[in-house]
Length: 459
Ligand code: PHE
Image (cartoon, protein in one colour):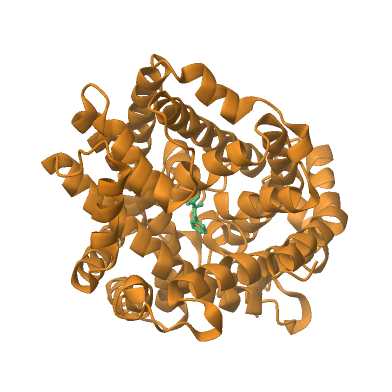
């Protein structure tokens, strides 16, 4: 008779991250992404500076970190893709594996629109290196951006190029692909970011930029802003769709899960704040309004760099930095379907990678062409790009988060979960583990439900 508590795939048969630094680099690589460069700084600035930061921190502590720890613990315990992991750990054949199915759908939807934004970033790296973006007139940089996104051939080719690049890394495997590349990219990211920050802080508008980012404006902390902060915590930490479960399945048995998750969260927060420190002093120095989203990155920033000494070099550094951040996030997004197809459908890993790549090229094309050929196709008032973003961020991630919290807090069994968090009792973190279980049972699910209802405009 087989032991029901034994992992479905013995650890020796599966690849994994080979060192503590590799674990940290890959997991941080997933968390750090486009979210740090344009979502976090502009949302913080626009929603009350230090006040928003505080709310974001609370949301991270009450939702983000516990759910992240739960995902990693589930993945490591089962040493399998999210669907297999949830089948293996569920009591009495309860259908918790549906979380894994929803996660697969979310991975496809997020990858298809995210890869298009990453495509623009890669296109901008090329443009910045050629120096073709250098104009201090935002009307010119806006025209350049529009020309790129409304050209169906360029949009599609850049997106497919990005997907093929990420697929190529995944073909090298978990250790030689994901881990090896993120170990190189993460230090590069910090170096570039610190250089840009140091430069930005020497500019005349530094004080104004820092005030925009950090000065608390408590009047702006309204209920919708609190909920926005919680939604951001989800997206930022790549939780609610099985990414962290998948990466958790590559963690070594001796990895301290609560400590690693906390480090990743803290380092991710640092990157977001440094990105803000790099961006806003420059934006204010040259008299621009701090806009949000794609227009900040693709229209305002090129115009700002055009006015700086060494503008071309700094702009190239900025877009390379953004491309580096996005690469780690894309790797983790695509790894979820790759490992699931590999383990559940018995495809070899290379075949699973190629199949994921082809499927993403097809599904992603809908998002790539949303600004051009398919711009008029807006069922329900949204382009396919906006639908993919809306359904994944506002429905699938929060739903996944609620059920992951409920699974870890109740269904899996508090004892099993606590044992996993303490590495079978070798770490003496009993009080912490009990607190995490308590939060996952009683605090996270109702809070996440509030985020979701808000995201769907129901409250
Ligand atoms: N955390 C990534 C970012 O900030 C986005 C992401 C979400 C990546 C979900 C993987 C899974 O950009």
